[in-house]
Amino acid sequence: MLFDMDGILFDSMPMHARAWSEAVTRFGLSMTSEEAYEHEGRTGKSTINILTKRFWGRETTDEEVERIYKVKSDLFNSYPEAKRMPGAADLLNQVKRDGFQIVLVTGSGQHSLLNRLNKNFEGIFHKDLMVTSFDVRQGKPSPEPYLMGLRKAGLHPWEAVVVENAPLGVRAGVAANIFTIAVNTGPLPDAKLVSEGANLLFPSMTALAQGWNTLRNALS
Ligand code: CA
Figure (tube, rainbow, N blue to C red):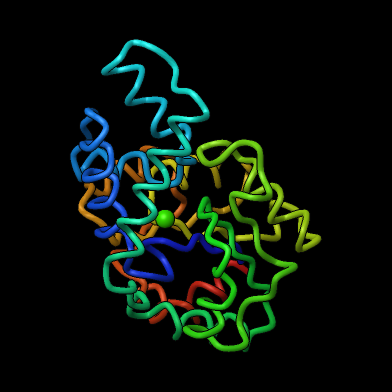
C-alpha cells in the first residue's frame, strides 16, 4: 500500500496551509488557506509558480522559489509539531500485520522525515520504501511519485492501493493506474476527490481503519 503523508499520517495540513498563506503574503503574493488545500501535493516550485504567474505575470525563478519556500518551511517548523492523524497508526498496524508492503509517497522534502516517522509509527517505515521530493522530477499531480513507489516496492499498478487526501494526489494515483482510496480529512468538498477519479472515499482515517478487514477481503 502506498501512503501519502500530510493529511493522511499526520494532521499537518492546517499548519501547512497557514504557513503557505503567511509566507507568500510577505513576498507580496496572496493565497487563501483553501487554495493551499487545492494545491496540496504540488512541489513548492509548482505552487509558487502559479502565484507568480497570477500576480506578476511571469514564471518564478529558482532564487524566488528558494527564498519563499524557506520562509514557508521556517514558519511551518515554528508551529507546534503536527500530531498523528487519528486512526493512522491503527490502519498501518493492521496493514503490516496482514503482510502488505508499506510505501511512503510524499511531496515533502524534510531531511528528518524518517526519524519523525519512526518516532510516531514504530517499525512501519523503511528508508528504501520512501519516495520524497528528493526522488522525483515532477511532483503530484504527475503519476511519477506513485510510479516510483511501485518500482521501489517491486509492484505492478494492479497489485497496489494508494491512500490520499488531496485532489491532486488522487489524480496522481489514478494517473498511475492504481486503485486509489481518498480520505477526506480536510475542508474541501468530497466532490473534489470523487471528480479526480477516486475509487473509494472515506470520511476519516479512523473510518478506513475500521473498514480495513472488509476492504482487504474485497480487494483480494
Ligand atoms: Ca496529503
